[in-house]
Length: 148
Image (cartoon, rainbow, N blue to C red; front, side, top):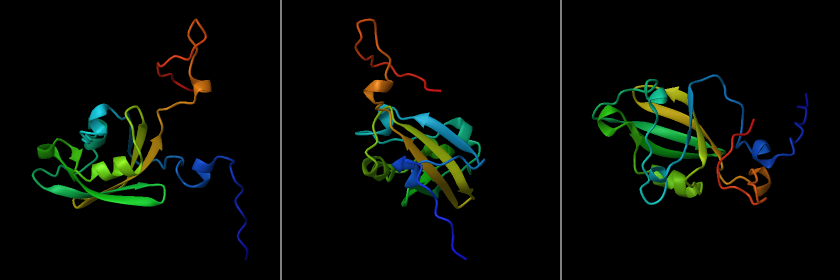
């Protein structure tokens, strides 16, 4: 039996698997700050998510980040490491050209005492000019806006 063809949404990011609806599993969304990107590359997960993760103590837990069709292997440290990803976070940032102000959604797909796996969506912080509010003189503002 032939599978029906799925129509294009007309949005390449959706068709290529970069964006998808959340599955109902635990997730956290955050905006990258300057410490999460060059040159510091330090990513701490918010408390909302750390309560869902193993408290690794002195040991690090294997972590996988999946974004689109690619995977990045790294480690996640619990309480003693300040709930952050290992230095391999740098490769994820560089490979995805992440910048301060970009939004990330971490959806927890798998969690055990030995491994955690997140699916990550990237929401770019560089809004197109037509989405930025105009100030009184008609020039675009650099202040972020909420959509929706």
